[in-house]
Amino acid sequence: MSGDLLQDLFSLEGRVALVTGASSGIGRELAVGLVRAGARVALGGRSAERQAATRAAILERGGVAEVFPGDLGDVEVGQALARDVRAHFGQIAILINCAGMNQREPIAEVQSETYERLLAVNLRAPFFLRSHFTASIGRAVTPKMWVDPGL
Image 1 (cartoon, helix red, strand yellow):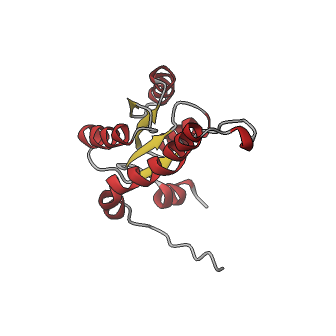
Image 2 (cartoon, rainbow, N blue to C red):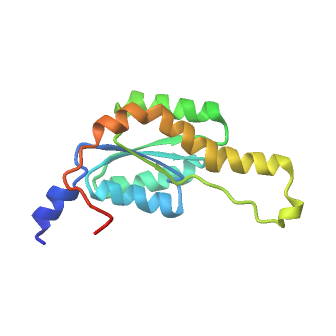
């Protein structure tokens, strides 16, 4: 395949993505990859300092990114994140939920507070973030190529 065809099929030029957990690991790498494909990226995460480092790496590549720090374990923080991203970038086309946590302790020792925190970050936050952007994500993405998983 030629580079032009791949660019035509998979370009994210003009699209806005929100990546939670973008301050490190998989979230950081996905944010950088989205920028390489042409997207502008909103970086969500707990560490403003690490998000700033991700943003700097993106800016060095000529990309566009903005930092939106916050702990998604709090539903109100997720609401504020959605509001702030929309105010800065407008509607988003792509939402990638990479924020997550794991408490490494024997299951018999897990306290109810820990369990509730795990649910808040790993389950509730992605659910409610998606609900904040449902209309915009549904309208913004127009596939250029359909893939039949049954083939």
